[in-house]
Image (cartoon, rainbow, N blue to C red; front, top):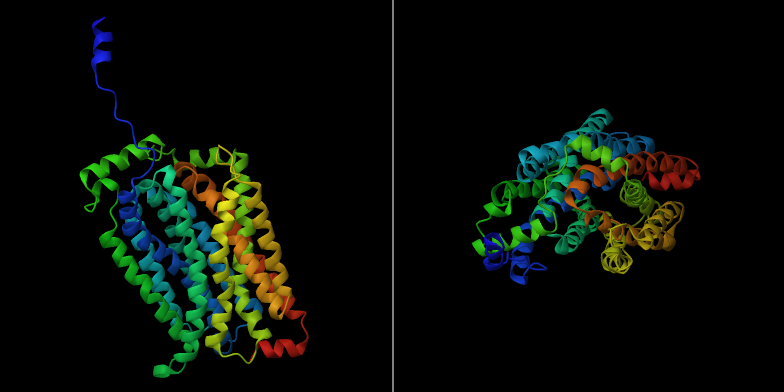
Length: 422
């Protein structure tokens, strides 16, 4: 009886709020998203600026189309090989250290690309670039899962992933301008300046992450004690703070889930669309518009990404309404990913306005595809789904797109190949 009376008289446990308070969410957005999104934006720019640099460096390094495809694709060999070790490093060292170290390392690799003199040196640096870049994405996603509860994580993840599209747009427009305006400055070719200038923001953001990003909400000086308690309660209530399985055990468990393979296939086709456009779009545009200045060519190349920034979030929201209760992927989004891939492959064979139209539709389909993957629980996401999806997507996106483009280019009439080589 005494125990029953004690139970009745004891105050009820505090219930966690249903969602992040507006002020707390604003603080998280202002302190976390600029650093993480800026880093992701620069990762996309630094891995894809080779597409515009190739327009000038092909003569300096005697690059053929197949050599360029190999240089674009070799990055993904090291990127995929480093996924498992970097996931383990994130768990042991913390996201902040891994984020800063990877950004500083790939910034130096990207800047060093300006010094290459041979195709072999270019291939080596592209291969080395993949190792540090592999650590950024899982570390950033883990950071979001440690700070945002389930009710807000999907929104934050969407804003974060939009930076991939934004990075493509900014990278295209700035690359064309840098190639034209800095060509010959201090005796250096424009493509060398391109790598040097675009590596500088990466190094700066890496230093800012090291100095400004806390390892956990408990260490955030810009959160009040009450806000820390509220955030901890929300994270505990949705299981975001739960300890994950060991890496190998989590990976084995993920491989047994049908949704893992479905997400992998979805990411596979979305990445194919994305990297076909990123790496081979500028060359195709150069063939279609041979007399256009490089600065304007970059602006034209940014149009598909600009369209996807406007259309992608709307497609993602509409597809999200059909999501099942267990976070399974919606059929609408899966169809969008397949559509994006088909249009991307078709636009490689197209010309003129059809090229821009196909590229824009493909980019919009790609922009709507990552959201369900990033809304999954963090333990499953970091060690299973995202890892497998990346493994499936990136090698195919690079090595299937490269030979396809080389074969297509070789089959073109000689006069078109001559225009491309100008």
